[in-house]
Image (cartoon, rainbow, N blue to C red; front, side):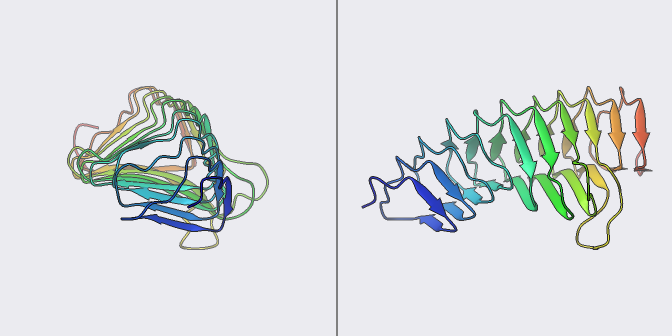
Length: 238
């Protein structure tokens, strides 16, 4: 019975077959939330910085604005919506992953993605086996100044009907491809494989981005600049 709980840090919450009052929680940072049952609600939640959130049941987080450094996983056909988030900053290791048919993560107000200052920053956005990640209003992806060793942002759509929507993306700028640690790739990535799709009809400028053209479509018709990156054409019709 936690009707007045508002602030959590470094706490793990597993929603299973019991009841936990979450109606007043505003901040849940550096922790984990695992939603395994229907009927869970976080109507007041504003901040999940550096928290890992996973759910197999649909959720809308109506006032959540700070996901910096967070990871989000949707599975089992769950639709997770974050209408209040307008920017996302990767502060170390973050994953946004929609896995399986119908599983969806949507950020209708998100316009900017950034890697924070300091070495080793990695954001992985993944749609797998029919999942959808909807970032249709993201206009730019930028890197920080200062130490950019081991920085990357990767988008991977893998599997039939897997889709990442970056319809508004114009500029995707990684500061450098340099890395001193093998588990942190220096290049950022745009990859569509095994029937997956990356939607990038307005993409114009890339820096330190790797594009392996494989077995899924990726819009390149408006690209005017691809500096310091890699292009590997493995299929016809590019």
